[in-house]
Amino acid sequence: MNQIVSPAVVVIPTFNEAQNAASVLQKVLDLQPRVDVIVVDDASPDGTAQIVAAISAENPGRIKLIQREGKLGLGTAYLEGFRQALSAGYVYICEMDADLSHNPSDLNRLIDVVKNGDADVAIGSRYVDGVRVINWPLSRLVLSYGAGMYTRMITRMPLRDATSGYKCFHRRVLEAIDFTKVQSNGYSFQIEMSYRAWRRGFKLVELPIVFAERTEGQSKMSRAIVREAAFKVWELRLRSLVRKL
Image (cartoon, rainbow, N blue to C red):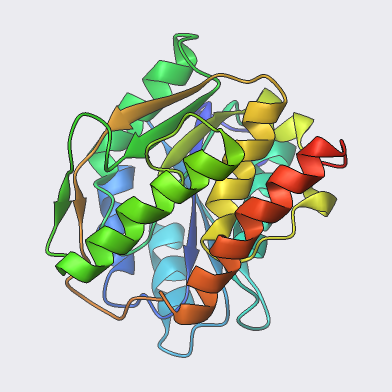
């Protein structure tokens, strides 16, 4: 990836995604216009990294695999991928889940909004223009939707889906954020990155997507992740009030 051909790349963190890795990578590789991939794997014991490495070897210059020494968390995985993407010169830097809950065919929709200058950050939203979630129990849907309302109320950030992990950033947004100050390492990472971008005056736009619950592998959601997000919004709001964000 020293000499990029495509201006766009998607960062995909993985941990135990052997059942989904080949499928999600192939769907991204098939996209037109071209989108490259950076996979950040946290030492998956199920062989995820080996699958990614094999597909990378078959598609030179399209996939970069970053292998970390342990399960270091979602937030740090994305930041490592963002650093690599910025260093390589990509202009449109996206993020998405590895489990196919995000449809890779929506990537170019997100990229186009940023490319056309209509947004600095394009967000694939489950809750704009209605609710578009498949195969979630009602309890999880209520928790997720309620988290968005809670985040808007406290932070005043104008997003309906603040915890969405399907995004495209223009590189200038990531260049403006001091990664050393980003402390979230669960799903609150999504809230924090959007909030930091919004507070710096960048334009955030939500696009409707359909989110389908994974059919293979296990969800990484936990009570600790929910608690982190609940407290993080207050921290972000307070820091912004004293201008320490």
